[in-house]
Image (cartoon, rainbow, N blue to C red; front, side, top):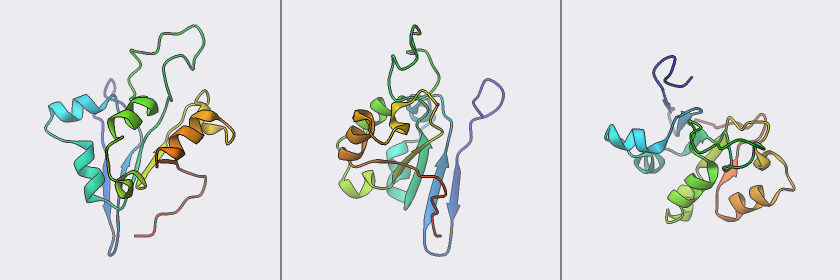
Length: 130
């Protein structure tokens, strides 16, 4: 899970034809940078990336300041990756969405924004052939 109980891990799964990055729960992209690892480099290296999308943005939990929550907001990831080539954006599938995340609703403006920006939310039973 996250680092308050153990190490944060990501899995790089390499098949005979394709590869996948699986990173369902992370405190933030900055910590990777401090360790000398750029998520953007991993997006270039893999064919598909399943990444933490727990929360869309601050304010989705009423009455709570979420700025200290240990997850990168989808909105922040979209902003960070806005200049990636379209092919890189298409690789990203947000997973681990909290029940409060509006990107779970097929009719939400947040999901439409995410998809219009070139990204996706993983779908139930989605498969990634390797």
